[in-house]
Image 1: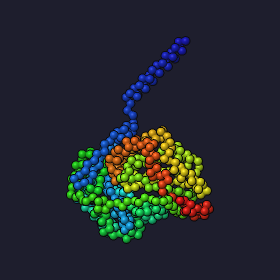
Image 2: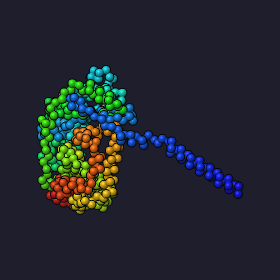
Image 3: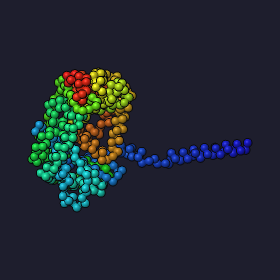
Image 4: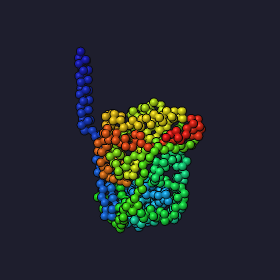
Length: 468
């Protein structure tokens, strides 16, 4: 009996000790830093200032690691090209990177020269240059960037070196069947101004480009009031702004390049078009593209577009269950690219030759039902909004990646658009979703493209006229 009491007493003591330990643990234990960092980053301020010459400076603190990323964003890219300059923004970007690499040491004003990896990017609505340096090299990095833009030195030797590089990039893309399909569809979707949506451009124009052709782009668009310097990482914003005022002094404001050279409008598609691309592939890819909204003309619809795509791409959605889980397609996705000048809505799918016709008909039927007010459940809408909000926090987690995100939004929308993005997503409801699909998708003209092997095309007797 005494032995039993002693055992019970020992158990009671052990339980008491365990409870006390749990209390102390959850009261005083500091959880791993990774958990708290997300909350801190989500509250990080995005500070901006416009210099007297019109250059926008954007600064974002993130002290996780002693690194700083600098991105100079230029509004331009494919949108500013015409039939005679198709692809030259991309070629100019390559040559301009060499210009930055050759900035003389005297330009750094006594700072030790950093040797960062310089990167350039050309897209439909921007060109950007970026590099990452140690936090101690912030000023040197800003002086390097400023000198390259204030005193550009485009050299014939760099053009001769970079032209084969760009042509090789062009040839690599042309060898990819999926690229050929996308290009063929885009050419028909943007029939009035295809060069304004193709950053890679025209091979023959690239091959024949002169240094003066590139200097025309430089003079027209590489002006401070058409650029933004984005600095993220281990910084003090006040130091960034102060250094920028000194570094970019003397770079003079010019007339708004888009006042002199307005972007030609994309004319609306009047009827369904189709195109077939035959390549040695093992499956059938169906790409359907619509002309979507633009942030310039209908920003409200762009929020609905992003929310809708998030829901439709969810594996548990009605869209995925009917088209993928049913076995008709191996995958099916819908996306919208936010653009200042008419963004594309893309539906990309893949299936087998034998299932193609049935799958295509099912897809077209499902697309035309998307404006049904009851298509999405309240739970789906709520979950998608939360998913987008979490994503907007997650993208700030790494400073170098976040700088690239801000580059895109500044060029294709505005900082106000980006800063209000999540709140405007939250305002989207069934009415806005239905309005979006009614305006841009349901029974609207589209371009339908198919990528198929010559053998499978003969096997199922598929012709372009069968796609429209």
